[in-house]
Image 1 (cartoon, rainbow, N blue to C red):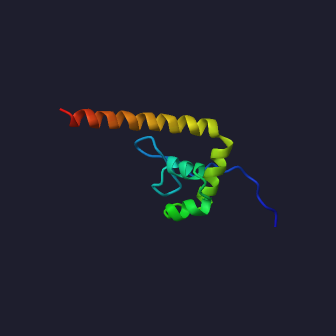
Image 2: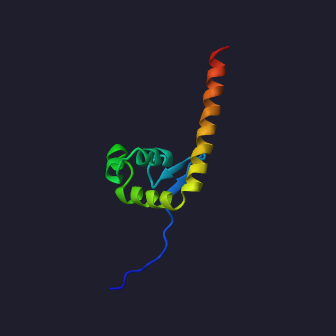
Image 3: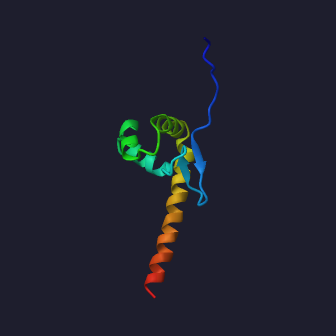
Length: 95
């Protein structure tokens, strides 16, 4: 039997807020990347986020390692957006 070699898209999907989710789960890409950068193995990440599959975590991490510049840009954008939301909430609470 011959193995079919073909490119596969990473198991990422964009949600309504612009966040990238892993596979069919609600786990955000930034959670997986941060855990990996902190030294967590793919197996440990799945234990932390059991809604994601091990295959999806490995696939997403491989994509991250090949496209770190793009993913890091996405992470910075997400953090800036979160900071803006935090600032709006805090300014609304001070009134």
